[in-house]
Length: 431
Image (cartoon, rainbow, N blue to C red; front, top):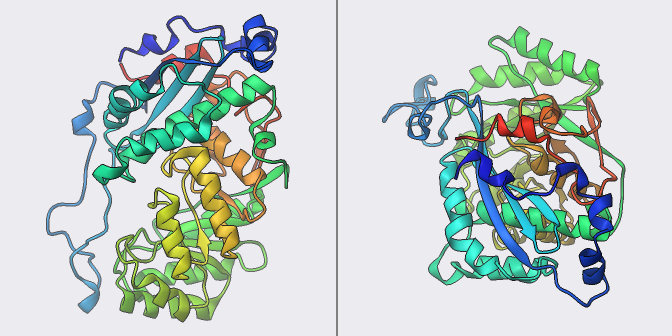
């Protein structure tokens, strides 16, 4: 799809709220005498830097047979390194239009092969959406999910594509009612959303400085990686940072599925000993569902997982096994706002907290997470404390989101509260 297509025949971006509310056709629909039919669904790839690198040349991984590089038995095959993208950030934006002039924005988590998401939206989901009433959000979610349910597709690219459409439909409903999304979700538990940010550095001194700088800016929690299979040598970085910010902030640790159970028990006990570690995220691979309950039962440090899970059924099984202490689903991966809310309710029913995972993306991604965080009682903290400052953040918006280090504010504008600056957005749409 060409970059100009998403703007073709579109109403003025600034008109979204007040002017559309005065539209007689919209008023007629509100009175129940007309539907709000979906007339167009478009998906476009956004990328930064938006250079001429062919998409198939962005993917990189460690060489075949790469090992973890630890000493002795810590040096084994690296089984958990994900693909990376040579310094590029990619996503898929979805725009849904209706016959009454209303439109909504959504987003798919699509760091790798985003044209797959684009094609799922255009070739699979759009045919079952056209002509449907955009207000029927949950029935339409089930309709989209059922297109491939009996063929065994229930996660990955499929639910990421559904997420983009679902978020756009909620945005339409907000504009249709003139209400911010959190009102449609039941109301506001909080106006300021606590956020955490990532830290890093080559040496222990660098990481400690990064952590101290973040907490001095106002972050109550920071997150760092604990490398795969490195044993106690890499663990020392974590322990020293946790100690350095004790009394000022708390450290969150992410291992991207790097450990086997026996390794995780050894490493986790050291984290238990030092304390001041808020959670250990993805210590085991997402496939290792049998060992997660054993690890959670063994350690004091809270076990967090969920960014790699994509529907309520997967989370149901994790909660039933008491496999995790904190869930961190991703709204642009786990089926959008409709499914994410179900997951949050499931977590609450199992006395679990949840923390939105917010990977690289644009404003619909961040805004949907903020509204869900605002409207759920068991929310804990949200990733992405510096999301608005990046090249896909506030720079693309007509009205920027308000945020300060450690906190994001929920928008009071209708729907997601997202209005893209057309000229700025065109610069990042992949042509």
